[in-house]
Amino acid sequence: MQAEKTIEFSALPSVKDFCLTVPLYDRFEYDDDKANGFFELEQFEGTLDFHCPECAGHSVFSVRKNNYTSNSHYKNYVFSLLFYCSRNNSHRALFVFRAHMGVIEKIGQSPSVAELALPDLGKYRPVLGAERFKELTRAIGLATHGVGVGAFVYLRRIFESLIEEAHRLALSDAEWNDDEFCQGRMVEKIGMLEKHLPKFLVQNRGLYGILSVGVHTLSEKECLAAFPAVRLAIELILDDLLEEHERKAKLKSAAQSLASLKASGGRAEA
Image (cartoon, rainbow, N blue to C red; front, top):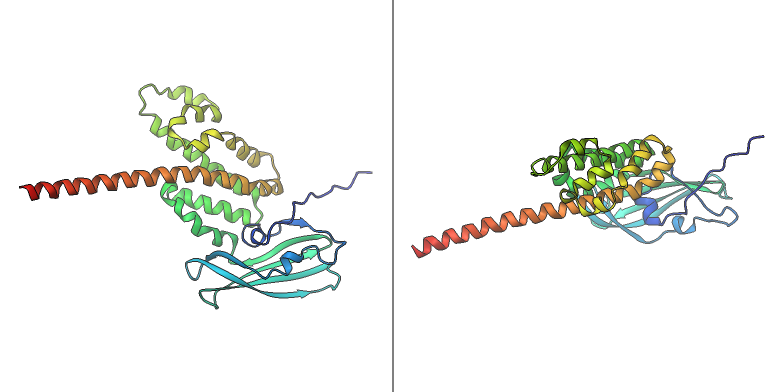
């Protein structure tokens, strides 16, 4: 007789993470022997700070509970947390949870995880470009709806685009060997492009292998479990690029300002 396959669950996330970052239908185990193993979540009375799409900016949201149950013994219990924006009481955010037989999951929310994350991602548009930025938001949107493998596909495409951009820069190097580059594995390519790539990417070049394993080998659940870590790694790489982009912009602005001052000083002397 074949043994029954067991399902592995992650530790119960914090209230903030459960509401704002955990995808829909991710399942978490709680202690069903207790009267309410998810008490901290269900009885949350604090505030959360997140983006309000209607205000078009971050705001502090205060919670008002809206609980209802279909079973008094918590065997099949649905409850929600309704948040009100401190800037405008008509702006609201709703998160709906279901607890059943020792397993709790988020089964609905508005705004979506992608909507809440989009404003913070917007800073990366200058270094990604319009198309790659869409892929980043698609990756997050897919992960939000439980499509882990598809989310990994988009993150890997972003990673590959960063390598190709560095490759184009390297082509102007006098000693560049493009045949060797084209025949190399990704980790070797990253080593050859070291001076054209963000430091974090070079130090964590194994990220591409993780993304590839996710695309070709891992299950949806395994990809979803790994998604927060690989997303963070991609964002750290983009942070390095953004810092360099902003530095170049400042240097250009300073040079133009100094040139303007020099020109006006020359006219004053004349």
